View 1 (cartoon, rainbow, N blue to C red):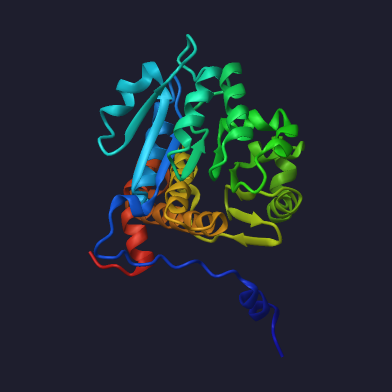
View 2: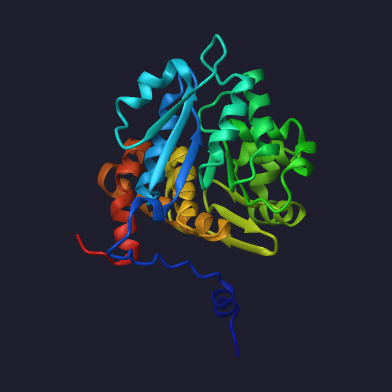
Length: 299
């Protein structure tokens, strides 16, 4: 007789494997990620997401930022290429930056938009324009989620057949679902699964027991800890998912694996720094060990 525990275990979706790289591999084999991120006072989010995409294995990463912020991100990130964009007087993406971003996106494999872009009116308009125009696989995070939540009709304007990943925390999820964060938190799995069945998107509902849902598939993560409840942690996650998708993982597999590895890195960081003192930088720094632990690669 099958017990409920065994039945649940049998139904659990397996985590994808990470293939070994061929000896003759080059950076072009592992994809090019365009990350649209950052604004005055929030360049850290852009740096965390970009570096995380590289740590997750992307071959190339280009970070698009408002023009005046270029010196702040180019100096510390020597492995990331940069793309300066038109900006508002306050140092946010201008609406007409969308055209150049769309043109550049055609050269890339994955586009991530949202970390640290802020909620300025022109920037939100730019985010919605990209959401309805970018044909390459798109990851929507942070304030880009808020931009589309205010205009839910844009869902229907997204290019048909495009792969789209949304990565909301409970507050952003509440805005997407037109409910309260408390309602989202009462039944996170049901909320994520219902949304995923109603929209052709892959959903990553962040938080304790992060939920990844797509169509009729739903998976709950079990790595991670309360020490990861710190500014920038979500930016690292979105970068990891982008890096995995750039290498050819499907949206669901990249989200599932990215969430697991991100949580594993958080567990490694907390073991060293403790729950109180762990920062997003620590989680980012522990990604290599997390990947090696997952793949069984030796130091």
